[in-house]
Image 1: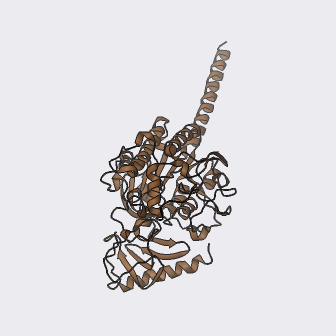
Image 2 (image 1 turned 180 degrees about the horizontal axis):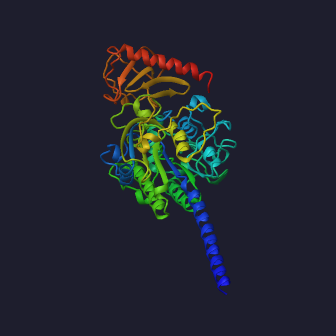
Image 3 (image 1 turned 90 degrees about the vertical axis):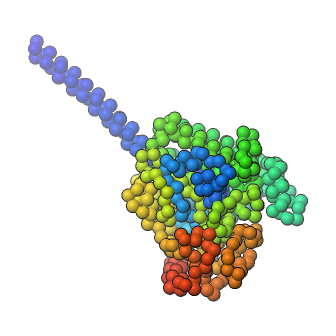
Length: 481
């Protein structure tokens, strides 16, 4: 009798242990499934270095981005690979210079090309590593298959395929297209632009009602966070604002003392807040890295509708700092060390960095121009980046090495406006045509970030060093694309 009782106890214990083992195995499986961090990249359009409160704007209120920066990292020397839309986006998603991918200029509704299928995007790489992927917002890397987001590793897409000022239904009435564009923007007539809104590869609304576009992008992100939360996810939110024409939802009309441009930025800030709130509510806050940055500098020619580069000189389309240096905020509670980072970084660095943080492998058949900047993010070291190349189309105009930046070719920013260039040397003349300089311009952009004081004569050895670096890079580009 005792034997059977003891045997029963042993069986019960083993059975219980078995259940516990199964439960622990399931819990371990769930934990394994959720250990990979979620990634959200928020990419704005034409947002300037000086357009956010945390970057010094005195009138535009951005409390959510300010808080995001205080809880994470604000980078002050962060760059894009091009100062115009399409090339900049290609570089972020591939980790490669536009000259390598072939996307070196802005694409238009009549363009028959796009980001080649031979390129590996961040979405493709993460998808192979078990991630759900979603693209929301402006794409601008080809509006037809096989160039759409769903052709490049994204499980879903919701947004406009190119810039919000394209597909105009009529020509501007005014001979001055800048003035006309501003007038159209002030009227907030979204029907003046026949831009399509797409769901995956289908047009679901045309023209897209851009008055609610930021709001709807945000709702789409929130819905994706909730629906994808059981597996690791990568969400790429590419706002189509503040690219002109400017639109804002009813709630944000005349909300900012900085006018319609301020309204637009403050709605984007609200959008960031909604995303961060959702992550907390869904219990994903501490396992999600959120990155906020811009595709290039502000479009100065549109005056108060075009944003500001702050103390930086230059703007969209140019190779002075205002066109290439952009705001960049990283947040990942408990992982990213809070602070202000003065190391150099670029949007191309996101590809290798995110791969490192997610244990994804970069395809070895490509030459990458990005660096793993995770040591700077995690507080274990510095960014390995020491060089930035400033391309305009296929031509290399300037190079930064360490503290110093040399301009070998100069040209005005898009729109032929000299108001965005404040070079103090009267002998330096910058025109709307590419000018190859016999003696390059040299600036210490840490001491003189506004690039006002040319020091080439005092440091010919630095000019020579950067020129050698440029020539080496150009020779390598020719055979290692």
